[in-house]
Image (cartoon, rainbow, N blue to C red; front, top):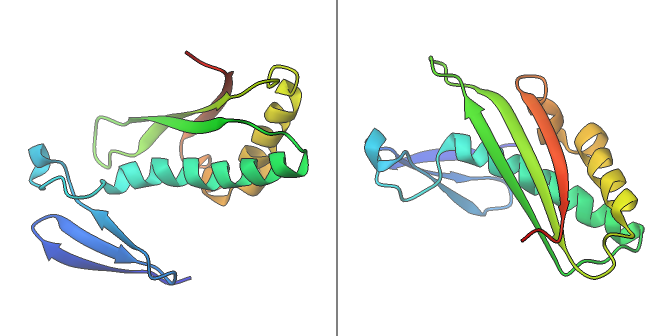
Length: 140
């Protein structure tokens, strides 16, 4: 795997992987950026959600569990001193749809398989931070 990140201007960078899809990185306006892109630390949290979410969709498809809507919310707490690494990360899997209460054990199994076996991003981050997760069915 190979990626290239190039400087655009100020704190704005553009990354491109082998897929040729471009991602915008920037720091917040308060940290000298323009806010054009996501911060690198936001990208880490999004990567956990995306990697795990893809696993879960694939696993639930094999289990023949359908849903109307699926979102992954990730909250990260960072150390106050540099390097400001993540110390605690919570991943909340939210599903909406009819009949999901009856499929709760399958949802939990799919999430567990992703977080403990298949999602390489989550497994890598879990070595550096306290990574927890939970399920919400039909949240408000």
